[in-house]
Length: 412
Image 1 (tube, rainbow, N blue to C red):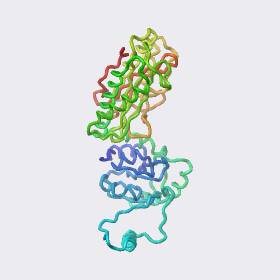
Image 2: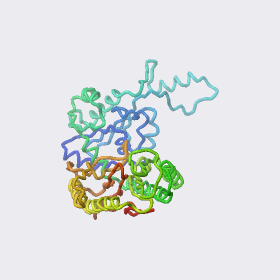
Image 3: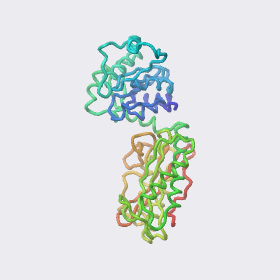
């Protein structure tokens, strides 16, 4: 997997923010910047398991820190030549060419001596953040940035670890670089867009299978199995790394294993992950003919969706998209309808929703290269779940949906 971080874009963003370098700490940011797996030590999502130093000057090379267990894979998968390792709890190593009939202890001792490992070597209980910080300190010094203004992906570091990082990188001035890190990941490379397109194509195959399986007395769990089987059988040679589903049946959109009855709503909000990149798409079906109230609500959500989609053009504030969508739904008589966001970025984060959000208080504008999940949901206990959600690629010419399934309330 290649890296997706655009160094020229990074340079422009850091110069605008007055930064001399950026330190990326999240596992998803690490993979984005390096193209390599961050390793198992990131499972706790605590800072210091991995790190990437990205100088603002695109002419200066990056530096990455990864656990010793994943060093070989990193060298295979990443373009970054400056790799430094830190120990984790797992005892492992490379011992090519061992004499199978020889003295195991003597041969391992020779390997350890060549690595500089002495008898005092110890492994941490999990990982050694201080070792990572020392590597970053040295890398900054080697690039003449010891006293520079360094942005840190603060969203990926806990308060308890902050003082240790500050002390380790002194006298560098550490600033919040979260916004820069997020903006870099929000603009997708062609390869990332390809992963997301594959993921949503597969997800729609699953949605179609669920749609075709809806019948009287079909249970929510039955439809979930249909989804899983459709994804498994349709993946082909895709690098499918996971999937998720929020399927609801009947008047309770929040749980249970209801069985479909005539007039019931079936809400299908699902995603597939290809190479770690998640899709996000939603459709609403009804068994038989919908009640007039359900039709009215879905029509209002569709009005909001169409109005908001038309505003997903480059340069438009996402806050304006949120306002337009809200007003279109309320104009149908639902003056109290309020939703915090109407969609979000897509990527490799720990959940299916990433920055930026289509919300009222954001200062982010629609930008070519973004891939956004744009949605108009409403979950009404006693009636059921409604959702209209497409995966939208923002091009220089405007929004392009990656979806093919119709958005209407489909009677089955």
